[in-house]
Length: 293
Image (cartoon, rainbow, N blue to C red):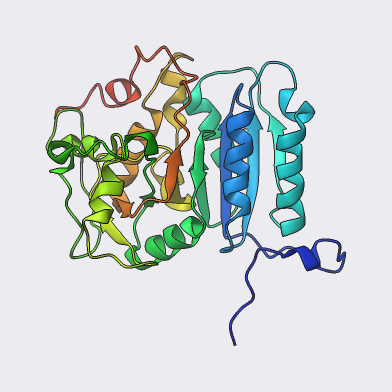
C-alpha cells in the first residue's frame, strides 16, 4: 500500500482531526528585508509533496514587515493547512549570516535540515529528490545549486568543463582555498547546470550526483553530520559583515562525511540584488587561516 503524501490537499484543510506527520526535514529560511522574494520561496515550498517537513522563517528585517505583508501571510496559511507547521521567528540583534545559520541549526530537531536562501524557488519534487539522494548516497549533504534562468541562452562550455559525476559513491574530500577541486565553483554560474542536464541522458525523475566545490542557495544536510563538523560555530571569529559562511561549513562536512550536488537542479535563483554587499571578509579565509593547503 502506498503511503499517502505528506502534503494535505484542499479537501483536508479544515479537518481538525488531521494531524501533521512528523517532519523528516527542518526547512530553515534566514531572511532580512525581502518580502516579494520570500513569498515566492514559500510558494515553492507549498508545491512540495514529500517528505514531511517543518518550515522556520527567521526574520532579521527592520520593523515587522513579514507580519504585515498579506502575500507572505497567505503563503504561510497555505503551508499551515498543508501540515507544514510554519513558524516565523525574530532573531536580533544581527551578528552576521554565520551566526544566523548557527542559531537556526541549534533549534532544529529533524533528521535533516535544509538551508534555503530567501531568494530561491524550488521546482515541485526537489525536496523528494534531495532526500532520496542523501539517503542513497549516505553522505553529509546534498545540494541543489541555484540557477539563473535569465542565462538560459548563455552557454558557457569552459565553465562546465569541471563537471564530474560521482561514480562509485560519495567520499570525503578535503578542499581549501586554491586546492584542486575548488575550480568546480564555475559549474554553478549562470544556467550551467540547466545546460549540463539538457545535454545528459537523464530522464524525468532521474538524478545524478556530482562533485562540487560548494553549493549555494539550497543545501540539505544530515543534521548530526553538520553538528559534528561544528555547524557554523565559527561565527564568533567573524565580523557581522562577511560572506562564504556556507562554504566553510560545507568544507568541514565534506572532509568528514562527503558532499554532492544534484543534477538536475530544481532550484531557481530569483536574481534580485544581494542583501550582503560587503564581502570583504570571506569566511573560509578566516576559518582555515592556520592551515597549510
